[in-house]
Amino acid sequence: MHNDVEKVLISTEELKRRIAELGKQISTEYAGKEILMIGVLRGAVLFMADLARAIELHVSMDFMAVSSYGAGTTSSGVVRILKDLDESIEGRHVLVVEDIIDSGLTLNYLLDNLRSRKPASIKLCTLLNKPERRKVEVNIDYNGFDVPDYFVVGYGLDYAERYRNLPYIGILKPEVYQGDE
Ligand code: IMP
Ligand code: MG
Image (cartoon, helix red, strand yellow):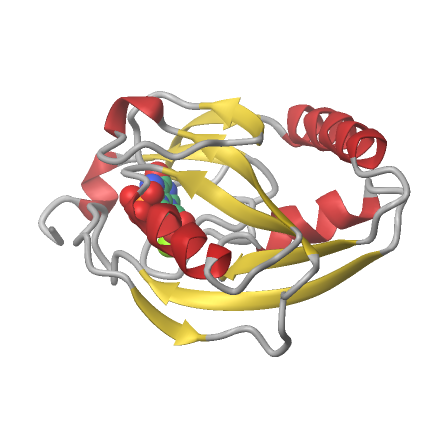
């Protein structure tokens, strides 16, 4: 375990097992369709890479980047598109892939924005969900795990751009971010 991690919340094995399940469920529910996976940079990249390999259908991938927290650990509520999609989503079956839904502000904005571009369908798949922190309602179609209200890192999730490469989801030691907020 990394020195800055207080506790492993979701192990590599648990991640693997759950992502295989999600892939199966998505493959069944989208049978006969082609999926356009839209990953929210940068946190969703590792999850999306593994989820895509668990889906037994044709998938395309595109990415968006939106501003969320900067280097801190709480949402500003301000959402800005930093990188838009490369292609049109009109008439496509869109599956938005996120690392974590916390306040819900980012995804709420993003889903509204994407819906206005007339996809054939749009669903949301998140690896983690922190229901205690929700400020706006977000309808999650596929949820990997509910997590308690701790700041978590690893498997794509960062603190100040670090820890994304940890192969598990861990709770960061508060002393790592105390004083930064
Ligand atoms: P929301 O708009 O508050 O739902 O924030 C969503 C974004 O905040 C996620 O895509 C993450 O980048 C970031 N975030 C929220 N909670 C955590 C956490 O516990 N660890 C790391 N990043 C987080
Ligand atoms: Mg982040």
